[in-house]
Image (cartoon, rainbow, N blue to C red):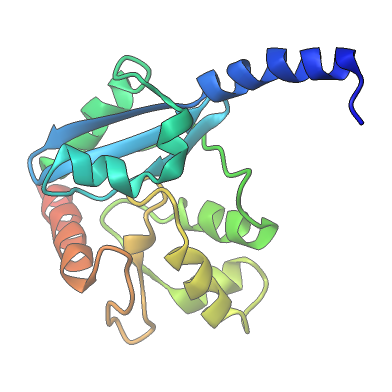
Length: 186
């Protein structure tokens, strides 16, 4: 049984935690993107979608506990618009990966090191972790990447150069790699 003072503390804490989440959707040259973040950093982004509603839906149930805020994400929105417009952009943003496993965080941190316009193999990522035999596990971690583009899992390809899996599909992966290659030579 909860003491009356504990119940009061729960009431005080809950609105603060719920209000901590912010989200937005915005249009880019190739579609609508959704972003969800906390005070700790970015939680989730979507790949471009045909509508704002579809982008918001892909952010999932946590949006129900979030507050709409385009101001909170203004700089990121500008950089993502520039990115999808074909400009070379970096994403040094703070990330809130508290929902991920330690292994997933390690894979995603290594993946963030892959330079714009370049690719690396799943084997390379596994070797960087000191776990050369974990190629399949690396692929599974990348498949659960909640922050496509920010964590550039599209830059990870098979050892033979084939695209393999991507949450946005092979065509989107090909498009993003082509977009970055084109921007690299401008």
